Amino acid sequence: MTTLYSYFRSSAAYRVRIALNLKGVEYDQASINLVKGEQRETANLRRNPQGLVPSLVTDQGDTLTQSLAICEYLDERYPRPALLPEDAPGRARVRALAQLIACEIHPLNNLRVLKYLVRELGVDEDGKLDWYRHWVAEGFSALEAMLSGGTGGGDFCHGDAPTLADICLVPQVYNAERFACDLTPYPAIRRITANCRALAAFAQAAPEAQPDAAPSSTPRR
Amino acid sequence: MTTLYSYFRSSAAYRVRIALNLKGVEYDQASINLVKGEQRETANLRRNPQGLVPSLVTDQGDTLTQSLAICEYLDERYPRPALLPEDAPGRARVRALAQLIACEIHPLNNLRVLKYLVRELGVDEDGKLDWYRHWVAEGFSALEAMLSGGTGGGDFCHGDAPTLADICLVPQVYNAERFACDLTPYPAIRRITANCRALAAFAQAAPEAQPDAAPSSTPRR
Image (cartoon, rainbow over the protein chains, first blue to last red):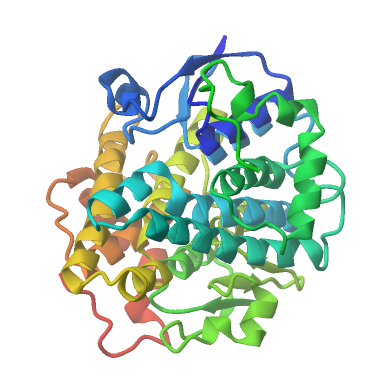
């Protein structure tokens, strides 16, 4: 059996849940409560020396970390439906869109960074929100330009089927909504997100649909 | 001809230079001076709506962004020598090591983030250095554990030839040295970095070897 070590609100785990669902891979989910600090306990550090989620223990007994690496692994092990296009420039475009989110927005806004801002730098709640929204706006402005120009314009980030880019987009939009970021300047992002959310693979991966979801986890809209 | 839009000190550009050199791809280099803000000028924004470097314009006329996406493209277009192992779990391990750096260390320490700390949050020079070193230490501690345990122990991050993981490691070590981070707790990282630097593909990609290198760019050791 495949086991995902996850937390309902972790957007990196959310990505992997979407990929597993798109591929139709059955998996167990084990909750690592980030708010309680369970990610730093020995059992999790043995799976993932970074003390983060997600980790995926495959049916072959391999322990994998880093959400995008896990998604690429799933795409190699279970080729259909493909998470990347066939052509090399298309694959590069999809990976670039995914990395724009995973390397340029998300790392700045995750829990450990927000904690550092508050505890080490004495940033107040307003300053924290400004920080959060600044990096979302920076990233989403560029993403919107990339999605609405040139090769964009399909139902999803790249063409008419979901790819690795959509797998990253939807959790990032979920986060942006939680922090009440203004998404009106990003019609392509909103349109594509709505198309994704209409698919069962995405809906069933949503934080509020997870067994470890807290009752108060409904995103603010 | 292949053209890399680059800045000598950008570690994302540094990664792509190493990959191009390992693959033996001839390329022109066009400098985008990040300190002067040239990345935000219209010509660069047209290539890369994020206003970042690097961008790669391929011999086929495609414009690619995001350093890891570019490296994967190069690996698909020019398969030998391979930047990823043959087996899916090995590929996942190499990508996870690369992403540990590219998604968890580097994004927190790049120029635009350091500027935000200083300008928006009023962080002083000591606070900025603490921030920088904190995220290097967090990431390198985990990386050291992953490199010295289990499947580690080769001359490079994964086995005895350089991969995408080494391509990310060496520029990150260069950055850590510039900011005088203490690297003594990371013998595996230091050993592998030395092995990489002994290779022409890495040496020729170093910031101080680039045509746009400033005279004062020699890293502090």
